[in-house]
Image 1 (cartoon, helix red, strand yellow):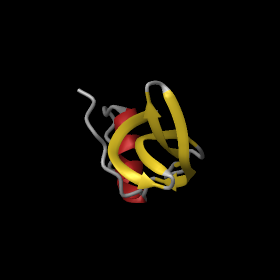
Image 2: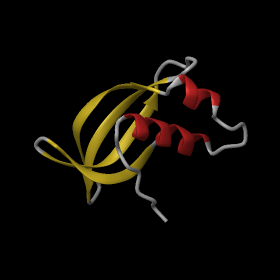
Image 3: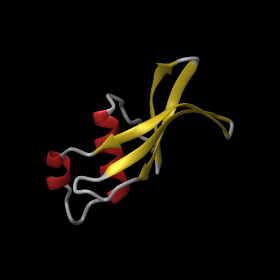
Image 4: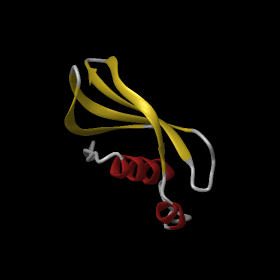
Length: 87
């Protein structure tokens, strides 16, 4: 899963994309993440690591939600990032 983010400085460039991949299923679940600079189809990974959804975020996950959107929103919030709508 990935989403555009409000650009943020990550040495030596600017990250404009958050990519996450499920890690442990928890609860709460964990994720591998990458902060990427994506331009014209070229992906440069600037930072990677692991992040967790909080217990509160896990408990508030609606049964009928867009699962990708819920996960991206939670991890971006926990990393202090702002998702950018791709509409």
